[in-house]
Length: 97
Image 1 (cartoon, rainbow, N blue to C red):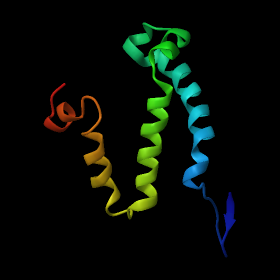
Image 2 (image 1 turned 90 degrees about the vertical axis):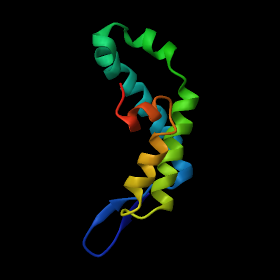
Image 3 (image 1 turned 180 degrees about the horizontal axis):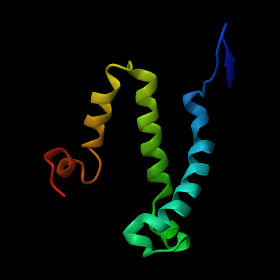
């Protein structure tokens, strides 16, 4: 939804409107990622079979919901804490690879 104030135009998307955008971006990410993941070891079709689209969408929606619930000042710490709850997050927090 486009909202216009006195001197600026900005986009606002309601939380329940993100699904389509996320699905479109997953497709683009798989295409781009096929070149990056393990130095292009998998083509986009193989990579698409390896991912769990539903889990990606749910995780993305969870993080987007944070932006609707926290201030710009609070958000970085809240996002970082939520990142530690993802697979590999504890290793990331501890600086392990």
